[in-house]
Image (tube, rainbow, N blue to C red; front, top):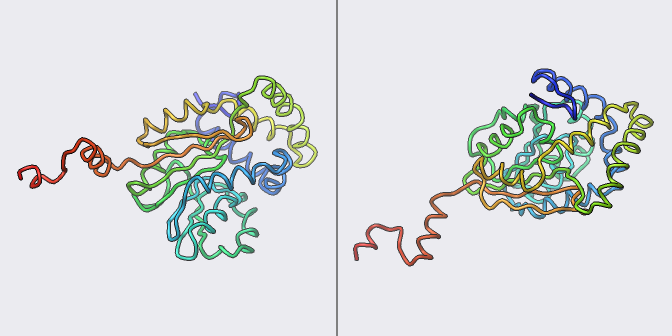
Length: 268
């Protein structure tokens, strides 16, 4: 069974509902993010990109890239020799962010691909880093999205997932619940014309795995060195991981044990 917020829906229906949701919010998506997060989403995104540790010349894929906030930040980090491919299955969301990309110094480094995150139309092991910001919880099959990111990463490539979660402090969680289910939908109705769209948002957050659960999912898929860090008492969480590199890790383990991975050396 699949869920759209708290609603149980069929698989094909969820795809249509998510597409309709972003068609509704795309035009004012950035404005609503800034209002509803009191501008904190900019700080979370900048911190997440810093933690990803991009290098000049890196190739980066931004999955569920939407209005390109993360793509622009990544493009600055990889420099003129790097490339960022922004993927999103919703055309209105990409169109809503194009003015920011066109007006940025990094516009030449960012490419657009309209694609389903569960079936990325890119080659295996072609990126140094993969990132997804506030989008993975909207996928019908979240695990397939992460599997695709794992597939397109080079060995040793890095993953960054920035997603909403719940506050850790009980008193703050109570206030967050009140804000999420009362004030956010009200503002959505006034500013976007949709109460439903901003009821889906807090419901989808509460249906999403908690940080420790997501860490286990990423490890099961094949990511190693998975860590997470909470922002603003846990309202947002950044997860970092790496595509497993068996040979390098084997060499490290052998060197620690005083052995050599070179068969000739062992015969001396």
